[in-house]
Image (tube, rainbow, N blue to C red):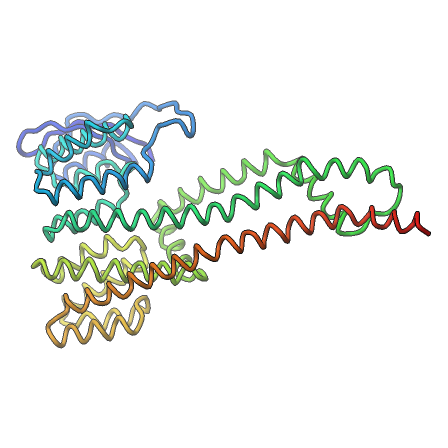
Length: 394
């Protein structure tokens, strides 16, 4: 989507500036109006020329550090605006510094912290902003920020392990096919004999990789960009989120994370005095998965019609039977918030165990995969030599 730079005025007369992704100028004006901001200037943002890997964005680690520091300062009793001012002043990343300064100005102008974060979707994800909204609604912003930081740290660790498990084998295989195999090919051409089938396959793979290397890189990049664009659409997000929930290993992990997040957030909101319907509305936006979000919103709709929470949750098929039964008991005993907290504690441990098991399995799996690939290539390359030696020996 195009990016627009805007200047607006809040109800209190404060002038704020920021950036927003939108289809056109009218969409920016309409969204600002819904946040009680009168747009005074909206123009397309000039394109920045940046070199990949050299600035131009805000990294996950920077967001995590900011979140940890912000939670500590809020817990110590510092005013929100002062926290933002201090953290912005110590930022070395110019993009992040500018975003925090604009967020502080928006908060000073009368916006909530969550609403100000939503004006910077390229820095703070919608999940982040919605979790902050839940913290503000329940008066537990410091607690929510600490949980956000923990969640992001776990996600970063798992993502790093998965990337390592995927990238290292690819690099090794490409190196063998591009640089090592061609040296054998020139030697085999002098044999004048028919090469074994495994050797022919490896040589053909090497030729294809060398001949279409740039095309392949372009296709991968194009595929990633296209997938991100599709995920940005409502239909694409629903399709991918549905697929992720059904994926082996990772699907179960995502489901456990969603259950832990749902029960923890809703339980905390209810114990803080937030109405159940408002709590479900806020919790749905913190789900991070469209399928889970739809199930929670359907639950909210059913409750407004007089049903219990457990009934629609059971019908959704997203939440495990144990969770549904414990919620039903919590409703019957009038201790729903306490029961939700117990479920969240259990699933937090389940998530930690699942992540630990997954990361511990990735390294040996990587070693086995590399051993099979490298061993297969080595055998394929030495088969003609063994054949030649046996012929000479006769």
